[in-house]
Length: 392
Image (cartoon, rainbow, N blue to C red; front, side, top):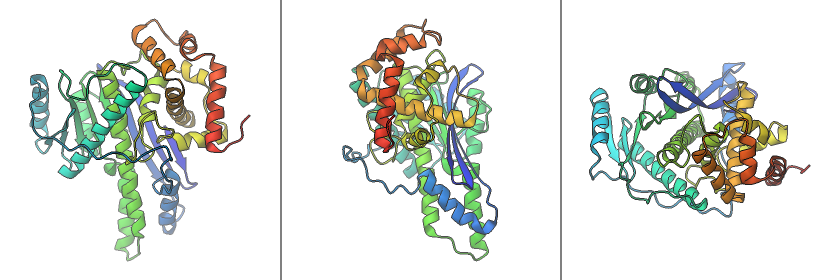
């Protein structure tokens, strides 16, 4: 979970493992609350919050990064496997307003405008390329870029949060109103709704409309900031859940409670983009959680590696959960960049040795990377240097 404070409001992004019925899913939700002391401060408060949340990112790409390549075009021709066709037809019979879109690897059912669905298809393909690059860096086998024998991956994207929640209950027996997206290994699909229909976002948009109705001016930059914020949150959900799906389907790291939660969520979090138009993945020096991690680092709230290894579930306290997800994502990225052989060995250990549990999780980690205390010192020294913080 991520909390971003402006002194007036709070933005919360939550990722939770959830078991519902027979389906085990990985969830991401967004909660955005503003409680201004006086209505006239609403616009200033929201602008400040967006600045803190990163909607106004005035940061140049790192010098070692190049801009993302051209988008992959949506492809609408070709056949799908029989089982996938049956699943798609079942969904379309219940949601007839959905249109079908197809990319090289994904079948997308969505009621979003075609242009929006195409952008999401491009983002999904870019995620697949990022996962392939990750596996290549770790020298781990991954299928070729063409469609696998099992067919394309099914993605269901809703404009409406209400429709999304209805589908989650009907299809996967998931009844949790805080969801923004999930991947269900049991149902073999990922589902999400556009962040623009998050209740908190709609409240902010409605409040701005009320100001305009009263004849008060609204800075157009605020609306652009809201759009950028929503686009980035939607992209983060799409990428995070797609990483879970791809790693699970190709048996690199299954979305299972048998695997360490810090590793499963940390790897998915390390793919979340700093800026969605840039290249992303754990090979990059910064991701969408780096800035908040550095804030925790300055405040002395970074979880120890030992606490990450011991965690069976995410922490109950909001602030602890926030630092858990950010710390796991940044640690996974650091390990991939600095010890890819160790990360590959550690992932294989989780895959092939189901006797690994929380009690011997530390031993498994040290067998792949070395002494926990040594790794933690190197990791945090590196992150302090990158953040411009004093080293201890």
